[in-house]
Length: 461
Image (cartoon, rainbow, N blue to C red; front, top):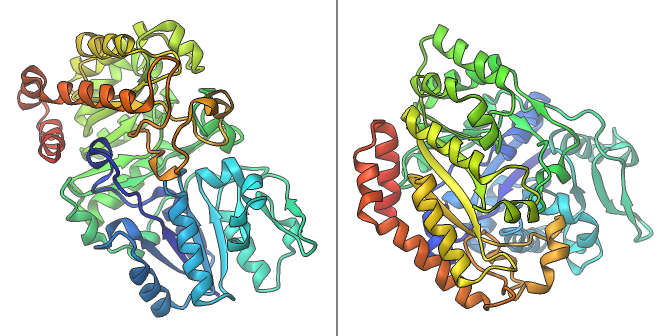
């Protein structure tokens, strides 16, 4: 049985979207599923609509399906590209109603029951609400007549009687695999010519111990599973030797969750004399705890660290359930700067109690205390299925999910409407990017790779 795994497009709607979305790297989750299926002998193809000329027009999708003739189509989606998932599933149904459609990803994990209660349900055969590898394989085995559907964990579907069936969740979460075969399913040159440098991405862990109200991670996973440091280095070496990318993006939110793993990773990279440019995201408290390792990480290729600072006020962080302090974020930022690694941060603007003055104050504090090379001024966006959605839904004014990229203001606050929020954020963000001292900070950065990468952002900007 043949399956085609399709990544729906993310379409830029606003200037902040354009800077963040254009270009891109292969979808790590799709690669994990493909690698697992290939290892079990399943005929698998991948179509990433983000690298096609028209970003997945109807004709591009129809041509692909006509050529490949899959018996199963697998789709993944964030909230912002769920509408494209629906569109693609509709095209599949139009082409061949006997093709089975499996859907998963963040939006499905958070909203699978609601989706099965909606008109979209007729488009999907199986919804995977947990990790996708084992579930997808077992669904294919079910379609081949060798696996009972009710025994497949982590899936949701409508039974013959029309009632929703939700099987129990996965018991033993898998750690991300080393990916080798799945890369060969991609049109790699298209990622090498995207205008932002040639980057490849993989995940080293699943899960998070945090409890941020706006985040999907605690809801999607039961616990945390991590690749070993040995496997991470093996994946680094494979990608570097096989494709020679400009950089590797570690897709985890908290790559540095385990200090012991970071120490072992540095030790192994050093023992093999490897220095491969890479980007990772990490928690501010762990960055501070591991500050003495930062120069060694730089020596092994780290040139940009992403930190979610979220807000510059203690009460605001408590409101969103972030168990950090602004002081700790500031200390972590200073440690990153002193190590010679570039810093990217995300801060949220437009919370329900925000005013123009409070947002200007936050931007000023970011400039004075954090000074990221790449600033992300995110719009408050209550994602359906998260705890924050129940609290924030009354402020939502845009219900078109394609706007839910965190780069478009979809909510009013208690004091100003969403148009004013968007204008204020865009103005503050533009001012940060255009300040001469911030540009000079990039041009004079001690890390050449950081300098070149951030300059590409400025050029795209």
